[in-house]
Amino acid sequence: MAHVAGKKIPAANSMQGLFKKSFDSGFWEETARTCVECGACNMICPACHCFILKDQTGEEGFEKLRLWDSCLLMSFARVAGGANPRKLLAQRLRNRFDKKFNFFPDTIGRFGCTGCGRCSEACPGNIRIQEVLAKL
Ligand code: SF4
Ligand code: SF4
Image (cartoon, rainbow, N blue to C red; front, side, top):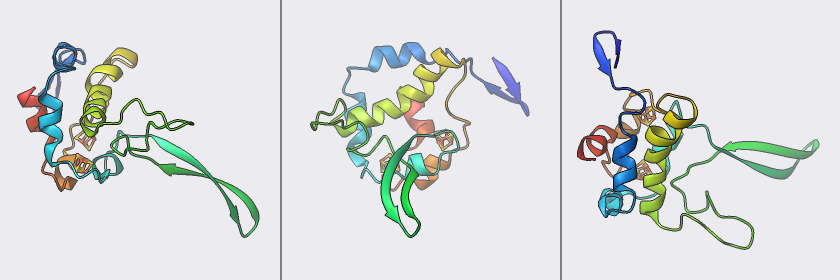
């Protein structure tokens, strides 16, 4: 457990067990009930970094653009041929949390979240990251 400005920061691996246990539970469906799939939580997050590439014709010829993307959007994980491993909104919401508190602790040894709370402020569905983690 680390300390920053007098606050306790849980160890990076402290939540992984909760994610493994809840993976197939109804918790994520219930949590996603008010999500309107706007992607604001991703767009405002200082730790989210996913992007999509887009080819287009510009004034000076061919352009390849790198645009922010959101893992909450249905099209995010869709591949050629139309297959989509995360068709359900609850799967996509779970994926966002799982990446930040299970996948990143495994791969880089820290959370994919600064704890800033901006996603909670931006969410029109009132899905608050602090409350989701506390319930979990
Ligand atoms: S609280 Fe975490 S997930 Fe939410 S915007 Fe901040 S860094 Fe991103
Ligand atoms: S900001 Fe809230 S409503 Fe919008 S995609 Fe994220 S969780 Fe869903």
